[in-house]
Amino acid sequence: MLHFRRFSDTSVSEKLLDSMFLITIGIGYLFALLNLYYTDQGRDGEPGLSVKDVTLAYYGSHNQTRLGAAINGPMEPNLPNAAAKTTILDWIQHGATKEEFEAKVKPIMQSNCVMCHSAASGMSIPHFDSYEHVLELTATDTGATIPALVRVSHIHLFGIAFILFLIGRIFLLCELPVLFKRVVVAAPFAFLILDISSWYITKLIPQFAYVVIAMGAFVGITFAIQIFTSLYQMWLYKSNNEQE
Ligand code: HEC
Image (cartoon, rainbow, N blue to C red; front, side, top):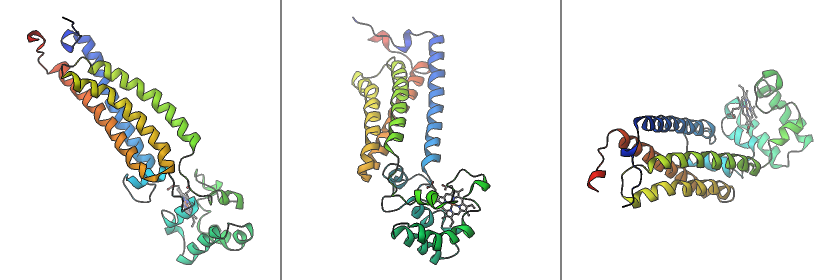
């Protein structure tokens, strides 16, 4: 009869190596989640990570410009009154001309914004020192650019495929119903590819943010199943190989 390797066939050294790898990857995954939280959570101006944050990351806000989104959101308290906000929004609406900027918008920014939004403040935020710089913030917000997505996609696919492969090799040593094992080793690759494809689709169809989140969650779930089952079977599970 064919015999496939199981944890019962491995040495303690091999199990130690596998365990340390799985634990380190598991911690790495938690940091990846934290990183996601810090990068995306504030996009909609409300604390916590939401579907809206994910939509804004990939699709953008479309009906808003970066400047408009800022003064309707986190930068609103810096404005002296509602009239100042209307003045800026109207300026964007009217085509963001230089004349109107100099006459109406610049004075508002000089007294309410440039103390932070200038090179002198030392903050790495957009500088409002010239019409051209402010103009850049009045383009429609269409979310992450394609080159940025391509860069993150190839890093994710290479890096995560490696991790899934190594975790899968370890997980295959578990004693489990064969169908369950086949699904759990193959599925995260499919979820990963669907997750990354959905980033691009979300650029066109904002509702796809739900698919991005669902696929990301499914990768995480299969990841966790593989790590925890492997660790459990390595150290706590009594093999029934003998009866087979
Ligand atoms: C107390 C300092 C401070 C003041 C005053 C301030 N800002 Fe900001 N602003 C920031 C910081 C810090 C950020 C970056 C943090 C963030 O993105 O939430 C920021 C971000 C922005 C952005 C987002 C840029 C982007 O990346 O999309 C815009 C637009 C903006 N501010 C506009 C304004 C306007 C208009 C005013 C004046 C009414 C103003 N800010 C006043 C500190 C300030």
